[in-house]
Length: 101
Picture (cartoon, rainbow, N blue to C red):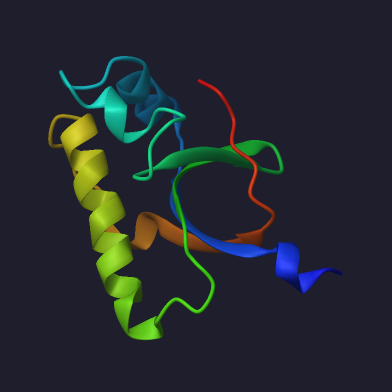
């Protein structure tokens, strides 16, 4: 296994309800998860889609909580204030692969 090709991804599983919100985001919020940004990416792990962000190599452990809160904050903006639980945020190790909406 090539460890150099792996990256940590912090994100939330896209449920049917979240997908509906992504299909119809709050005004001006699509920029936060379109393919040309540094905010959030949509990726596939197995048969599930997740929205979140990749971490750079050597990312400080002390900042993990900040990343989780940032992902939740942006998703709350996109979904017009729907509650995102801290327990919904997951960490994955994989090769970066974005998917299109």
